[in-house]
Structure formats: structure tokens, C-alpha cells
Image (cartoon, rainbow, N blue to C red; front, side, top):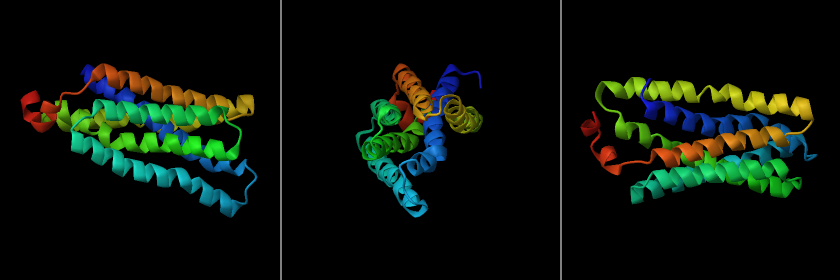
Length: 194
């Protein structure tokens, strides 16, 4: 728990999960605001998830093929921040959905790549508690993301500042990711890290 890398990765995960749950929780309400029927709201709300699903598979396979983790995670976090951030300022429904789909690609594509990082430096008896700490601290944003968007929407009457706030969480996660780096040799031989 007191390893700085575990705490740093907890913050990276926090930033990504804030976007994941923040947008996921409020997406149907945002789409309903386009004036669509309930059925169409459901269909249109599925678009970012399809893009995210495809991105998760393709981007994760690309990272595995190249063996590179840091830039893949940083790029996906950048796409999450750009997509969610752009959706905060766009008013055209089509452009907003494109931005949210880019954000979903980034959010979902970062998940499989992220989980390669803690297992690269944690080994032996430290693996289970280290992953548990990262997961526990990071998933606190499952409360934070939706709450902050709703709270800011109630205060301002708009989703814009709430979406910008969780996009900023992805930016912080991006900066921490670049600062941490990744040693691919540890991923191939995790016991040596102990």
C-alpha cells in the first residue's frame, strides 16, 4: 500500500474509472437531451460502447504485439480526455456522440493495458495486496465520477463542467503514466522484480 508506484497506479486507475463511470452513468441522460425517443436513446447510447469494445480488443492486441505499454496507455488516456473534454463543449448531437465515442475508445482501450503495469513490478506475496490496493483506491472514482457530474449539473444546469472535470482526471492519469514509465523486462520476468 505504501509503495509509491502502487499509489501512482491507483491514481491512474482512478482517473480512467472516473471517465468510465461518469460518462457511463450519465450517457443515457445526455443522449435523451437530444430529443430522441426512449428506444432511440437506448440505441444511440450503445454506440460508444461498441466503439469502446472494438478499441479494447484492437488496442490491447496492438500493445501485446509491440510489447509497448506506456505510450499505448498514454495515447488511450489522451483519447479519453480529448473525447470526453470535447463532448463538454460540443452542442451538435452528432459531433457530441463522435466525441463520446472517441472518449469511450480511449477509456476502454486503456483498461487491458493498464493491468499489465502493476503485474510487471509486483511479484510474489506483493501481487495480491498490490492489485487489491490499486483496484480499491481506483474504484472510489466509481462514486466520484457520476457524483461530480450530477453535482455540477445541478449547480450549473449543464453537463459541460462535469464532463470537463472527469476529462481532467484522465489528463492527470496520463501525466502520471508518462512519469512512471514501464520496463518490459519486468513484465517478462516478474519474479526478478521482487
